[in-house]
Image (tube, rainbow, N blue to C red; front, side):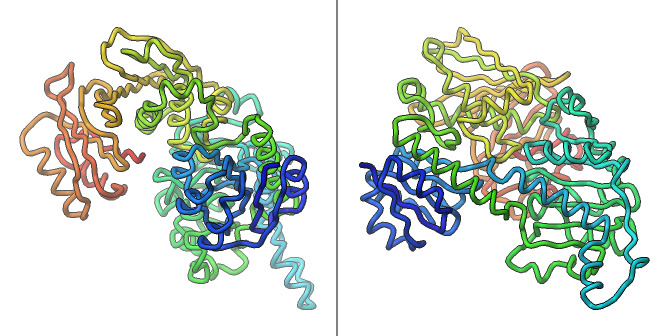
Length: 525
């Protein structure tokens, strides 16, 4: 009988489910050394966030087939090490959807009706009805940034409360948004001034970090109310503090913070009754904790019984017989798609995949999945090889495949929006050296790296030196670089620069002020 180790105080119902097909040992949280001593006995491991499943633990788990995380993130699991050992890693991305959405609505209502302050006042023996006069949400406009599963649930509840809902999500299908009764807003410039309330439901990425800042706050409707139950750092807390002090923002309701380990230092704590603050409670319900435990436990049972996991986040979720022929190209396919997606600004309508060489004779369905994962994960969290096709279908993204006459093994991804397309092409040099060979109208030859900077510019002297000077001044080291000329315009070139660190927005702003630079785009893989 298989053996399963369950730790980190996972709900007892998970133990009972696993016990149907395996010996389930429910033990306290252990450190790396303790875990390494016993993990070799087990076929599966279930954890929450406390246990660190390191590469050393995975190496010691000689019989491990699956690692389950009862929750959304997998930061405490070395996914790359598990993938290399052929171990499936699963999580539960949907278990807390309703909890997080309900907390958002609760925060909005508590803020609107001054409930925490009124509760405190009554408990002091006071009766200050006039002091706590609130506002109604009925007929007010709620602006939602990010219409994933949580944002969609918030939208439906808000609509049922008689609110008007406007949505900014460049990766959602406008038709789906309009069908649910909300209004799709294409540009953020048009979004800010429409909203009486704004709620955020996006991951924290380089695009969303500091999304709500001094500039965007000043463009909002005076007296707006802001809710964030998504991720800390999306709001500049000092700018929000100043906006509330000035009256530009009426109130805020915040569940997540820039630095949760030192939340006592947040300026939001000084706002008194104008700020409703909770300690990251979005997923903290009895039901959510049970749901994530049951979800992961059922996936473990399915895998140990010979089936497939529903929320596997790594390569073993794919059928081995299909994967084997193209597995060397999976990372390349995902990287190409990530680059193309980050170069795309509007909602994606279609993803076209063209392969050449020996790849044109193979079943490339695993590559299609890797490409969809890359396209979607560039701007969404929780995307894996299992749910990428499902999410793409929900968003109305059509996938087309074709074969080319290329003699070399190549993969080309073309992303089409309403009126624009982005093309990125790559190939393998030797067995495992990835190379990007085309970006739109530029023939290039550069390795995809974690940090890449693309700078289209006019083809004239001293351009490289000027860009390099800006990077050097901001202490960003260049580890690789190529300049390529446009295939249809000899006056245009592009710099593709590999850097050792992320290129921040402030640096990009300096680069685009250089005479002759068209624009600059940081790509993070």
